Image 1 (spheres, rainbow, N blue to C red):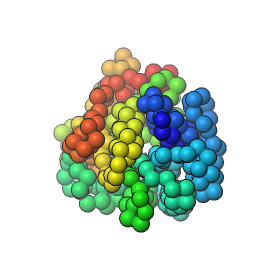
Image 2 (spheres, rainbow, N blue to C red; image 1 turned 90 degrees about the vertical axis):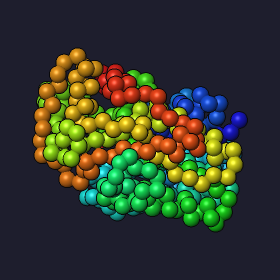
Image 3 (spheres, rainbow, N blue to C red; image 1 turned 60 degrees about the vertical axis):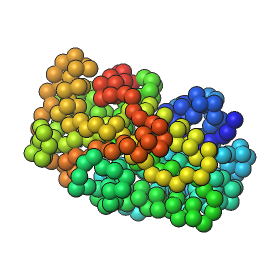
Image 4 (cartoon, rainbow, N blue to C red; image 1 turned 120 degrees about the horizontal axis):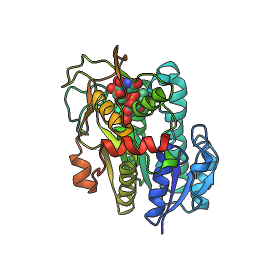
Length: 317
Ligand code: UD1
């Protein structure tokens, strides 16, 4: 039985990944400073360490004490708008966090790493679907820090033995169980439910994009599918030398209007979404090419947009 350390393991995605790792028969150590995570989301079967990934000595101690095989690194700041206002915070937490983690792993001799990257590394690519070979041109400090993190992992793996997978998440949504919803209300689906709670109309940011119905198209991926991808990536790292980047999406796009229509179906009434101005910096279409992850990892998403919205709604209620 192997043990994996999960940074950010008390967060929305981390709590799902922790459960999936435990279900796969691995032991789990969650390291989380609870700046965004929730202690009660850490499963009882996991060990919890309440420190920041910036505390290199504490990370090194945890890696050594629990004889950790690999790390899944999720701990990071993730709000695009905030990153524009506070870039240094993002460089400190996300890039500084990666320096700290890689140092601790080198000191402890930890050889496996699954890194949480983002479709934000692509910026506004000229074609869709987006393969992993598409040139990266992030549009925000957040996206920059995620891309720099990928470079750091790659460089470190040249200098010492390190088996790694970087996962570029597309738009993560849904909940694996009603107690594990996305409570941050930063992203479209939680924002729609928040608007409905206030008795307001959900807003569609921009309806004059060059897409079929004029609204932005995204590749929404269920957090449970994403969690399964992490466990498959961890297993791949354990099995030998690996150094690769995978998109994690469904390969299918959904427009904002389609999301609104599906929310209406799920809640049983027309949510009355209204068109408003474009939000600055939103690319028209971001859909993953998922050929590489299907071919090399044998993983593909099994849940659809309705599953995501229905589970998010159950968690929201
Ligand atoms: C999100 C994340 C980004 C992450 C990326 C890929 C944010 C702000 N962005 O980007 O960190 O890297 O996924 O995983 O957290 N929209 C509306 N009305 C709303 C809210 C959103 O129409 O009230 C639209 C947006 O214009 C966009 C789509 O819904 O087209 C999705 O928006 P959002 O959930 O914020 O995600 P992204 O901006 O795609």
